[in-house]
Image (cartoon, rainbow over all chains, first blue to last red):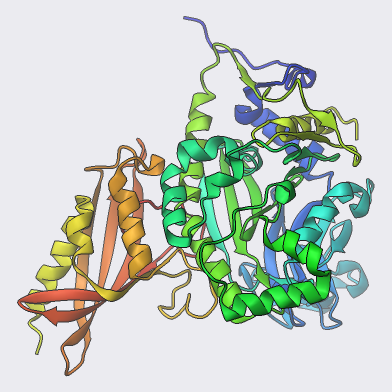
Length: 424
Length: 159
């Protein structure tokens, strides 16, 4: 019996022009380490939304790859992304997931920092002679930080694309869900569901962005229940395949753009709150755009590498190990709408998503099985070739495909390979 | 006065029904204004207002949940029959109202053999029960998981 040898496939062979992915990308622990360096510690990573830290001193704990950071609003109201590590001996400074504080005090030796990161007080300071100046021992800010409409991104790399360059054409789609608020403002103030699955992180963007293909197979029961509850059959969105629903964008971003696929009118009369919402949307966007936004599903989107918007929520992908991933589901609440609209969004969200929703668990289960399947190496290639012959270039530099095509996945993998090769 | 033994017997009975996935019999225990709630956070009141929960079912949603579990075709449920057992303990009558409503606290440890690796779910349950004939009906069941604020695996059974 032969002993399994180290996997030696070159990066150029991880994804081929024939739309084949090597199974190693999901199971190779060395590759996972290289992804951290080549991807997570190079590109812009979504950190959080400014509404999560509404007041001075409000903070949330986050990660960039495996590196712990804090997003905190200082007394000066400025939002900062700081490494969550005491400058003294490197202890994890902040353990709480979120909170509000004037100062962070390290539990190890008591050094304290203001909520803008400045060192307030080293302890037993007299013993440090003049080696310790407060200016030099503030919390370390992440190299680069920027935001788009309240979405805060950071990069631990000193150099690279600007956030604007990184986002590129995906801002059009970010706008579409943020503008579901007639004030053009969302709030992530309804809490978070946290899930874990024993599978590679890349399954999450892949699986989240192709519901029309796998939906009828793994979500049939949930779709039926939803149709019974609301009169809206989700699967009707994909009865006919519509051109350019599936979009890949430069930068590895993916979009399911349903603007060309309006859903059938609801069977129920709109409630007074809904009518009020429609009026406010018309006032902001004009009747045509408002109608388009309210009669289609807001695009599902993936911003490389860790941000998703899926129907009701912002979803964050957090790699832990090559075969373990955490994911965070933040329901997106709309500012400036009648309460009933957000209540309904939250009810829809709880119906579908989270560990005990009627949709998410099927995805989590299938991703875990995917990880197991990937241990079989007889023919070590996955095939994402649907629509390869008919995909076409879009004006934004991406490519378009039909509803169930895998055009967007190919865009993701092309970008992935280019980063792993160090081409960007 | 509520007979604590009757309360205990009811809690054990309920636990056995969900362990054995007899969801029809379990759902029949509920009153129509019932709420089944698994909040995120240690406070039974969390998940009130506009805060997302792990589960926050009114009677209609609970019926859908049960329907979904009963179809047996739910992917995430495959292979679970006979694969879970819970131990319920520390049962206490916390409050009683004159009209026969009673608040019960209890703790549980639930083992689930969803894969070769067993999962353990631990928590506290608050039952609000109403006397009905010789037994009770469930008006509210709130489950406080000790790990509700951490990352959990999928939860596709009745906790």
